[in-house]
Amino acid sequence: VQNGLTIYHTGDTDVFADMSLIPQFRKVSVMLACIGDHFTMGPKRAATAVNYVKPDLVIPMHFGTFPALTGTPQAFQAELDRQKVRTKLQVMKVGQTVQL
Image (tube, rainbow, N blue to C red; front, side):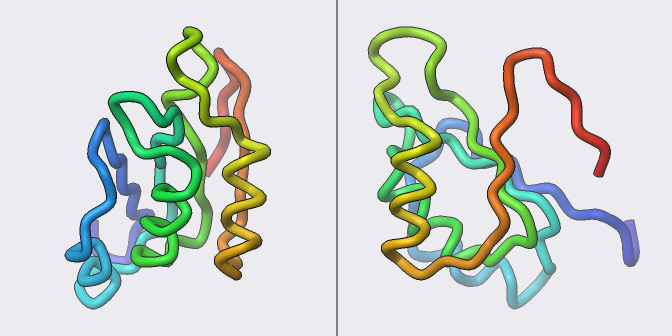
């Protein structure tokens, strides 16, 4: 959609350097970043991915649904702060909706 909202859903991927190319082609409005740290990126790697993509808003996902997923939104926020990533973070509860 020209001049519309752009959403990047990371799925279960890990961070990769070519993520840094994404903002050269399209501004990402919302990034859905996995932070669970088992089968997915954890907070540290997810923060690096956000730093590469530079979205306006990041919503963490794939965490807290079963014991193996140890990454938390608090650890993610701490890592965003440590890496000096200024992207707005919005943590959602299961079943919550958000208007974009």
